[in-house]
Length: 195
Image 1 (cartoon, rainbow, N blue to C red):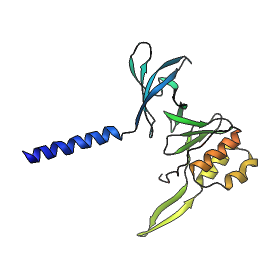
Image 2: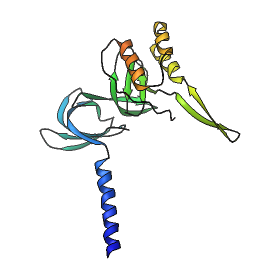
Image 3: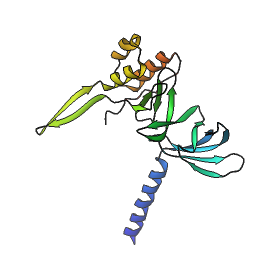
Image 4: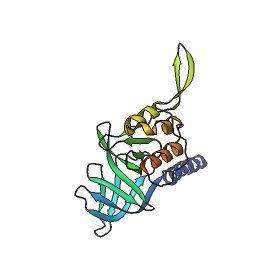
C-alpha cells in the first residue's frame, strides 16, 4: 500500500512539474487575419520553439481556435510581442519580430533569423562548433552568421560593424537595430551554436 502511495505521489509531482514549467503563455492580444482584419481575444503560445501553432479565444464569441501560420498573418500579445508569419525552408512558421527595416530580424527565443525585403527567412548560424575527425574531437569558431548578414544587408558601409560582431543575441540584435535606425532593447542571451 505504501509503495502505491509513493508511486502516485511521484507521478503527481511529474505532472505538476510539466504543467508548471511548460512555458506556455496565455495573455490578451489580437490576431491579424489574412484579410488584414484584427480580432481581439486571448492567445496561448509557447515562449520558445513557437513555429506552428497559436491558440486563440475570440473576445466576443468565446470561440476557441487552433491557428496555423496559413490561417493568419500574425498575432500581437501583451506586453508588446509581435509574431509574424514568415517562410522558412519552404514552410510558413510564426516568429517573434525583433526589428524590421533594411534587415528583418526575428527570433524563436532560441535562435535568430534574418531576411531582406523580399527574401525568405534564414536562421543565423555560427559560434563555437564541435566536430570529430579520425576519432578525435575538435572545436572551432564559425563566423557564417557574418556572411549571412552581409549578404542580407547588401551594403558595404556596414561590413566593419558586422565584422566586429560576436555570435551573441545582444550584439547581433543591437547591430541590426542600429542598421535599421530604430531604438529597441535586446535580450541578453547567448545563442545556441547547435546546427
